[in-house]
Length: 320
Image (cartoon, rainbow, N blue to C red):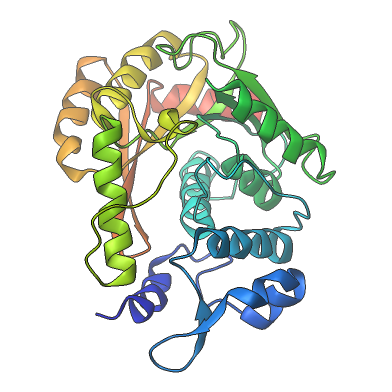
């Protein structure tokens, strides 16, 4: 199927509350961000589209989306860092909002009574931005990169609408996930994470090459990418499963601090091992939430150590 047609059809798979579930309104986006106009190109059907193979075009599109739909006027970060696709990131937030709603008589749990922890918030701070603007949640964004924390803080400080909702914390120990971030008596209704996918830089380069070939629809031998500043965003020894394994093991230590832990799981082949591990550590409930983002399928795995009675106590004590 043609990649442009595929992008449009895949939008129908996005969450009903996703602001970008329909075809992009390019006129509105250009009005919000005039510089986007230079990246408009005709697709094979003669319709106006974005030059998706150009990283600067994608970043400018994201800036326009954030300004038009989310009221974020200032969003920038170093070019070496990952540029996240906004619709897919928003879908994660909407799906976990539905998860919390199941603990709240089906009502969306919005407002600043909700505390969320974003593991590996990155230089773009994208998950907290969406959660703060769409639901008014409070966020702590953690990262092991001081440079990413500084970039995220610069975005927060330059956008008054989110300044009071988001704080960032540096994870000083690269092997820790929750330890050193969650304080002893601190409570979080939710943790979210988009874990590193690749096990090595070489693996990441191969993956990027495949993506570029799919976009350009032609064979190329290499792709010029700077991995010096984004190793932690893309790569973890042992890949996605090892990172999630560490997260599950450590979540057990903070079982009373967090109502729902969650993570994206890109590789379906990792699910069976993840379920076995969750059972091993005595998790009370596990939810697997399917997601359709772009032209691929993914899923969120969420778990809680709380019984149903304890979940009710949490709601009564924190959300009233």
